[in-house]
Image (cartoon, rainbow, N blue to C red):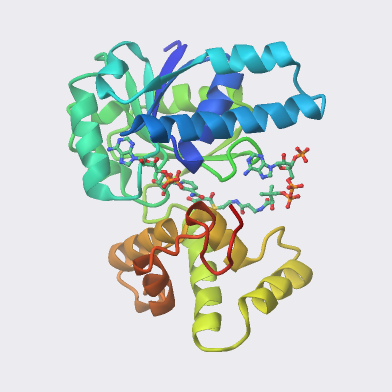
Length: 284
Ligand SMILES: CC(=O)CC(=O)SCCNC(=O)CCNC(=O)[C@H](O)C(C)(C)COP(=O)(O)OP(=O)(O)OC[C@H]1O[C@@H](n2cnc3c(N)ncnc32)[C@H](O)[C@@H]1OP(=O)(O)O
Ligand SMILES: NC(=O)C1=CN([C@@H]2O[C@H](COP(=O)(O)OP(=O)(O)OC[C@H]3O[C@@H](n4cnc5c(N)ncnc54)[C@H](O)[C@@H]3O)[C@@H](O)[C@H]2O)C=CC1
């Protein structure tokens, strides 16, 4: 199926990045969130990224303007009435995602693909709340979306080959490398990454070392570009906790229990970079 207009739901860290990369690939994008101020925040992030590209000579001012002109703000799901694809990037919460997919099922055109950027939640279960499970798929981008090449493409039990092929081709058109992964908790990326981040948080909790020392060990010792605690703050501690809960519940092994310190930080509203403080404090 030819895709030229999509809706991105959620204008947060991931949704704004997905909208930017889609518009850069020439697609018309409807960027949706629950409040106009959240959509504007997402558009500001995209504008900042594009301005940096212009400063660095990677894009002209005209290209930046043309990309921004392809992104239409929205706070109404009814704006999905004429898109060929929706990519949902709302919060990592099953009830909220299922509620969005139920509503989309009666708004989006009959043949439209409904994709989710979920970090860990079961695609099969999300698909099952719609009447179009063959058109539901996981399209899991990595943070920050404009930079990271990977898209994990995850079939639900009923996802059709045509849907898979369409999303595989679109990922490449967006300059990404699609990798097929099966529908199990955390897929591959977060099945491996989040237990490592959780262990790093346990090291803080048990007093093995300070956050700075732990990050320094993994940067200097393992050549990680960001230490695990900096990365946790970057991802969002609420998202990290949600993923650990999905692994713990979905795989039933106590090794996936979220560290009590992670839970405490989320309860305190210390969500990392996006809230101004997590393991580290971020200015303005
Ligand atoms: C949780 C999930 O479900 C799945 C996930 O996403 S797991 C998380 C996956 N992501 C990671 O592991 C990220 C690990 N960190 C990194 O790769 C790097 O630190 C980084 C690419 C984020 C930044 O790179 P860096 O070399 O450390 O810093 P920096 O020089 O500032 O950035 C490098 C380039 O990336 C760009 N960049 C950095 N952060 C960016 C952002 N948030 N948005 C857009 N572009 C960004 C910068 O523009 C810069 O390019 P230019 O200087 O040419 O403009
Ligand atoms: N943060 C990360 O590093 C990554 C996150 N993800 C996944 O992407 C999704 C979004 O994560 P982030 O962008 O980090 O979250 P975020 O907290 O930055 O943004 C989430 C956005 O969703 C919006 N939202 C909530 N309910 C909504 C609804 N009903 N309709 C429309 N918008 C709604 C919020 O207002 C917010 O703007 C989650 O499923 C997460 O697991 C995937 C890859 C990486």
